[in-house]
Length: 554
Image: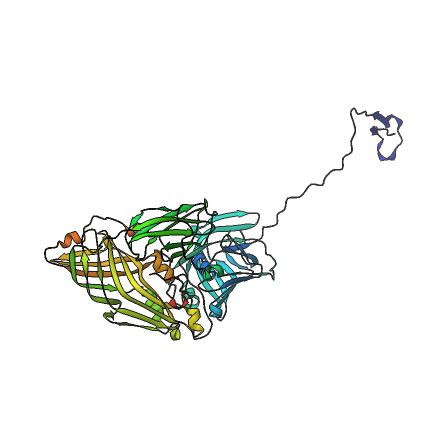
């Protein structure tokens, strides 16, 4: 038993009975003696620092595609998340909340493709914060040392600070002059914007020796369409009565949400129009493009993926030639200046040759003596003449030939041409041969945006914007659908008795420019420097020698 109470005693060890008292204490209820949990002190340790950056989503998609037969390898603990590379912090001289100083991150990203022709490693990226609005991202690049790759606009980012860390989220990045010269070697101009980045300055992390690799979609590369349409229902079309060369939109629901690599194929003779349509979050896939030259009658357009959908369309059997005869037509068009610069530059060491009715006068190719017919609704003008592009010791071998302008309403037209190119893989193996894609709808021509003059019976359209169409993008796979190509000039004379004003009426019947999608994640190119491997894939340029020709339009 316990005698619980209050006791009092005299001080200093003196015995005084009057001061020695005891007052008992009593308790009611059940007595418990729980074991107390020690309190957890709040941690003041900073969270781990990290860098999250996709470098360029278009570049990553390109390297992982069938074009390069490539792979991306990460080391040092770099992880992939939502299309980004995530690096852990190695060291920092910065102190929150300002973050001014240099923060270096662990790990590396290696890009490999084209049997080793493309092989570059970006190692230990670092963010150097200059002030509240400016920073620079650098990386160790083989053969170049540490290179300032992009400038970082901190003023565009969201800044947050907590527990000894500072984070900048969604900062815009643009290529620096050093990056343009020593990393991108002229294929990116200084100031070109690429992927935004997010970085946190915090606690250091240990580097990991783990590595991971992602490769190309080999199945997509080897895919060939079935001989007959696998479905004829379930596909919605913007029109069921169409003309050859007409733009059409098709859509279908029922795919796996986010499903990739849905194929678009038109029959009777199977013709692949697209290999990379992607469904949205609801499983709906949509494709807008130009139908190739098809015989009159019924055809079937299909979407082929985890499910197959199709729709029957009718190609109208009518003469698309207009009422007014065209003579003395001339087309001036440089294709794409960046592509020409690449071909003639120190990397491709190539050239081009115009012949059989075509000529080259800097900076344009010229096709003359065109003929045809037009009216306010439709028509076409045909030219003869070819241009050969060659480079990389013959690995680049491409020809464009016999351009034809097909009017689609008065304000828009499509430039159709014969295209042929060799496969880079076959060319390297010594067995390359050209694959032909005749009568390919290549670029749209936005006539309503051109400068227009009419003198007598002669119509002059200058500064005509051109944009790459889906079938053209399937051939020049380093460019995305909707990519701007060089402006064109078109001059033609209509026959007596025809109204040239009516031939180029300002009333639009259709608008290709509204139907062509803007370029998204434009695909990269790669280059060879000094005959040795020093290659980096980019989002601009025109390395046609990298093209994997798999589609034939007839």
